[in-house]
Length: 398
Image 1 (cartoon, rainbow, N blue to C red):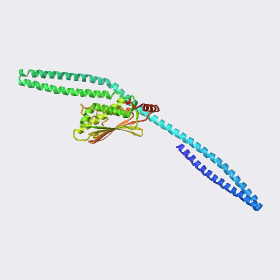
Image 2: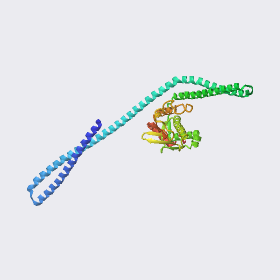
Image 3: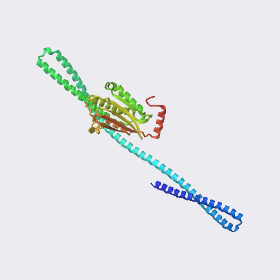
C-alpha cells in the first residue's frame, strides 16, 4: 500500500513538473519572438535615425535575454528532476513487482507446505491404521478360508451321498428315501449359503486390506491422452463382449495438445477403470427396464491451471440422497456379491494423493458425470522434464 501511495505522489509530482516545463518552454518561445521583434525594431530605428529609442529597446532586449536565461536554467533543472523522478519511480515499480512476485512465491510455497503436511498426516494415519489392523485381517482370513474349504469339501461329500442314495433307492422304503433326499437338499442349500457368505466375507476383508494399503503415489511424467487410451483398451479387452452386445457407444475427446503430468500410472488406471466400469454397470441396469442409446463420454479439458477429466453416461443416475455417500468406504448400491463398496473411496484417495479432487453430478434416471480435477502446476525441473518428454514423444507411443 505504501508503494502505491509513493508512486502516486511521484507521478503527481511528475505531472506538476511537466506542466511547469511546458509553461517555461512557452515563455522561452515568446521571449525569442519578442527578441526577434526587438532586433527588427532596432534596424528600423537605425534606418529612420531615431536614435533616442535605441537605448530603451536595448535595455528591453537585455531584460528579455536575462529572463530567457533564467527560464532556460529552470527548464534544465525541472527536466532533470522529471528524469530523476521517473527513474526512481521505475525503480520503485520494479522493486514492487519483485516483492509481489516473491510474496506470491512465498504464499504458494506456504500453501504447498500446508497441503504436504496435511497429506503427510493423513497418509501416516492411514499407514498406522494399516499396520495395526494387518494382523487382524490375517486372523480373520485364515478361519474364513478354512470355513470355505470345509464347506466345499462337505458339499462334495453331500454330492457323493446323493449319488449313493440314488444307487440304493430300490433297496430303501419310500419314506426313508424321501427323508434322506430332503435332508441332503437342506444340506446343499445351507452349504451353498455358507459358501456364498464365506466368499463374500473374504472379498470384503480383502477389500479392507486394500483400503488400508499405503496408496502414496510413485509419480512419473505421464501423457494424459495416452493414459485414457490405455484405460479404454483395458475396458474393451475386459468388457468388449458386453459393450458390443448392449450397443454401448464410448466417445473419447482428448486434449488438443500433448500434456505431461506427474502421475502414478497404475493408480490412475485403477481410478479410470473403476469409473468406466461403474458407467457400464449403470447402462446395463437401465437397459433392463427401458430402450435407449447407451453412451459413455470421456472428455479431457484444460481449465486455467487444472486438468479436468469428465466421465459422463446416460445410465440409471444416482439418487440425490445417496450422492454424498458414494465416496464413503463400504457404501454401495450393488448387492454384496457384486461389490464391496470401496471402489470410489479408493478413487478419491488416489486423486487426493495427486492433489486433485473428484466429485459427482447426477440426475436419477437421466445421467451421471464424474469430474476429476488435477492441478497442472509443475516445478521448474518438472517443466524442463516435460519439455524433454514432449520432444521425445508420447510415453505410451514409444
